[in-house]
Length: 265
Image 1: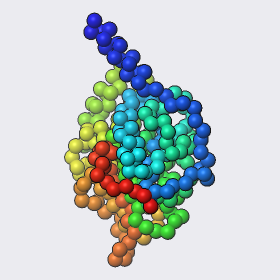
Image 2: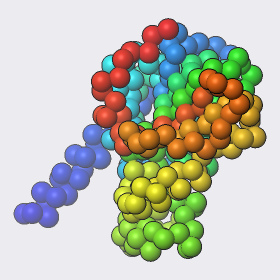
Image 3: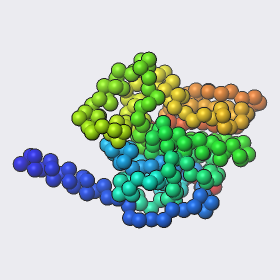
Image 4: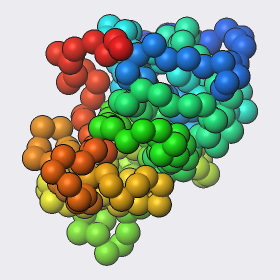
């Protein structure tokens, strides 16, 4: 009886993750933002995140953006649309993106990011953001990583890292008897930090996975990294009394940001 109940509940859970109906893409040149912030979600699909590890975080991120009147952009690749697991199927824009690229002008000064892979497609998304900003007048800029909404394959973790054994043990549990390949071995960025634990090591790891801002933005920018409410770690100093600041802000979840003010222009 318990087996049948578990099977039934499993089927109900799968049915609840319905795919979005067919939709049109928006050409990058037609994307317009009337807010000084935007949420960009890169490839929220079970093809890449088979555990759906990032689903709840992504849904919370989109809900947060809706409540704060922040536009939402979904980047979709050529994997089957039925595997896209977002609860909200009506973002402001669906944009075609094979590898995390998008080709649109990022006019908001604050970008929230979700989805993945942290090391692959999301990295391309982040570099596109920086390239777009580099063409604009210098100003204070922020990229907020919603860590429970970002999936990762852990490729930036090395055997020499002091937390490697704990990470590997967690990943071995996640992938236990799973089929081979790249689909299953994914953790959220928040889960990855849970295997690291010590803040100094967390900050070192997060610094390692940042996009290459030093190759993109002017050295006139002061660059900072902040983990939740920690003191800012200065990654790059800049001349002048009050230089423009590029801040990489890592937060556990969009749920933690409920008290942020709206981002209307």
